Image (cartoon, rainbow, N blue to C red; front, side):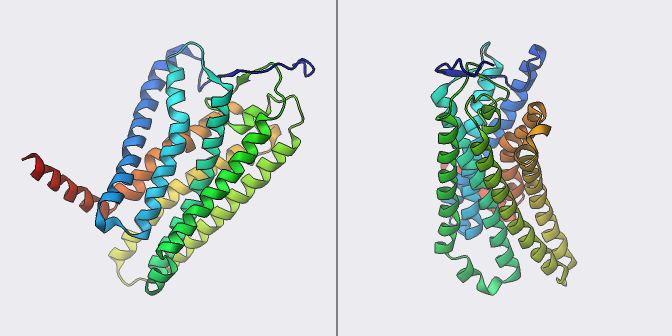
Length: 313
């Protein structure tokens, strides 16, 4: 790559998940189903928690925002990836690439801190139920949601501005299926050391701080569960916490693997696999794990179905 021969880029080429033609159709079918289930599930959670008066509680307030965030970053990545499976030239305009990166960063960072807020909410509900209405008041809920959005937007603007105001060489092939910051850094001709440092520091802070809150909250919850007298209550809460922690740990493991490993160990092929989990699989699983296994949500769905059934009759 001749770093002196700089050109003005108007588009990038996304390599996609695979270059094997025989896998394009099966992958399109698989990821179309995953994305469709994700959209239906998350939209369903957003609508249901808005229209049902019995779901106007802090827990469902956070679930609604988690669903909105999952819908946001899966939609930033999913439709373009699906289009690329059925087109010959997988290009994305320069400006659209910047928008995709900024939207993805905004939502993925917000997800980490919303999960922390949800863990805190469950901790207070189980360990300090008498203080619940004060510790998780409507004002506290909005603070726990607005701060992550503002902070995430701030980081999104910084990282996107740093990358897209730097000098790109003529090479415009992104070794990924969407515009992510790490593959884009390999295309820069100007020094990317300061951008890499920003990404590393903030990635470490975001992942570690939010994960500590989640783990401490669930450890305290598990300790409270062990003190329960009811074996049935212990089993039910263990089951719920276990499924929540499984999804959280998969998300954090893939993000740690992608953004906090040394650059010398980076393989963009393995990064693609990890990215599939946190961009498409996790947004599909969250509505199922957090909502559809919930008795209150099932009852709300049943009530809405009965209302619609009466109207149709």
